[in-house]
Image (cartoon, rainbow, N blue to C red; front, side, top):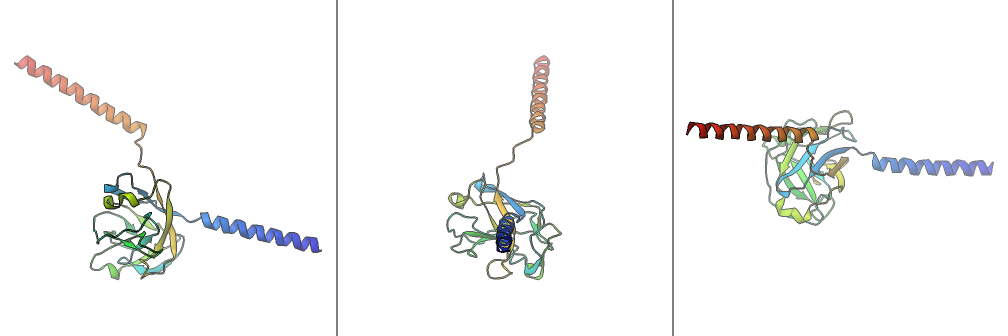
Length: 209
C-alpha cells in the first residue's frame, strides 16, 4: 500500500513538472522582428491568437515587448506609419518608447498616439489574431542594444502603468527573409529582357546613324 502511494506521488510530481514545462513553451509567437537593418526594423504579426482573454487596456497604452533591448536606452517619442493593429482596435500603432515594466528601460512600448486612442479598447482573445499587419521603425540609434537572431521575450498588455500587465505571447528576432528560387529566376529574366532590349535599341541607333 505504501509503495503504491509512493508511486502515485512520484507520478503526480512528474506530471506536474511536465505540465509546467509544457506551459513554459506553449505561449504563442505573436510578433516576429527583423532587426538586420537597424534603420528599418520590421515588426510583423504572425496572426496567432493571444494566450489570454484581456480587455484591460486601450490603444494609447498599447503593449510592452519585454527585454527587447540588451541594455537600458532612452529616446523621445518617435512616430511612424504602419499597419500593425492590436486585436479589437481600429488604429495602427504609430508610436514607441522605452518602458521599464521589467526594469531599467529595456522594454519597448508600442502604442497609438492618435487623439482618440484612449477611447479604443484592445480586446485580446484566444480565438482571434492578437495582431495584424506590420510596422517598420528606425532603431538605428540603438543598434548596439538590439538583440541577435533567436532572442525572444514576453509581450504584455499595457505599458507598465496601465493595462493588466498579463502576458499575451512572445516576440522573436528572426533572420531577414531570403528570396525564393522562383524570385531569383524572375529577376534574372527581367535582367535578360532588359539586356536584349538595350542591345536592340543600340543596334537600331547605329543603323539609323
